[in-house]
Length: 330
Image (tube, rainbow, N blue to C red; front, side, top):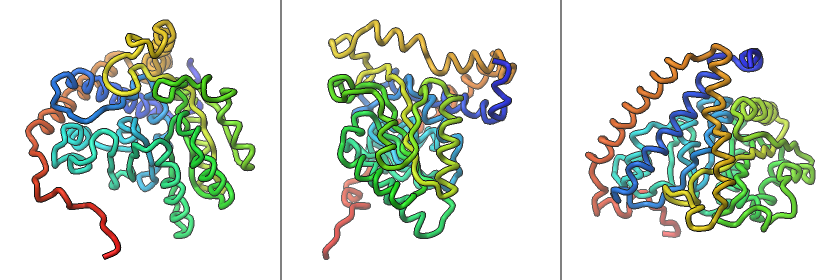
């Protein structure tokens, strides 16, 4: 416990904890408010998976790119997106990060390097590889990180994209958040073995499996992957094993509907990534419990302001219906 800060700077550890807590509290606020039916878009929550975006994005520069999926709130927050534009987007308001037109599954924040989240399973993978190719051709010192789930790993686009990234030694990191379920289909029903990271060997690339609930382990593994990409060493496939607490979509826990085993969920809740990381930080005298409480209070205040901002903002006008829509061939 006491050697935690020897491997990772204390300030980095504090920032990772803060990011994890910001993600958790943002998601819990959605759970609290969603029954009001003012958020009319479906929401895919990442509660239980916060260590992955926090640990990965702590290694990124401001100019680095992130591509995400339908469960992308945490990735955006970890890369620096503010609560107000995210919350306003969930309420469908014009002040939202996508102008109120994208909703939870189609977030974008180019100023912070979030180039888009895609509701198409595996859809962000080829886009991220394309961005990495552009960065390579321009000679930019920019790394692209692509977040996707174990369901997207089943898609052919993953293999085609990873092959091309390895062939061209592109500056890209593939992060598979393996939570064992594609919607409600367990991994054991879709794949013969739980060794996603090993598939990188087939493309002469690096692969690593890490405990996705251990923020320090995620940070360390992704740091090596990001450094490799930035130095021209090509892609890495990081498999982060984790578990989402909520159902595939919505604020409920889907064991009530028979989709998952309740005991399985309780076991993973016992491995809460935020609680375990907080215990380690406190034991290492890096953050006091009092400072943690003050941090949570500050985040809650920020969230209340974001909700008020979202509710007070206006909806897009009818005249904006076709703005920002691409129409070629004319």
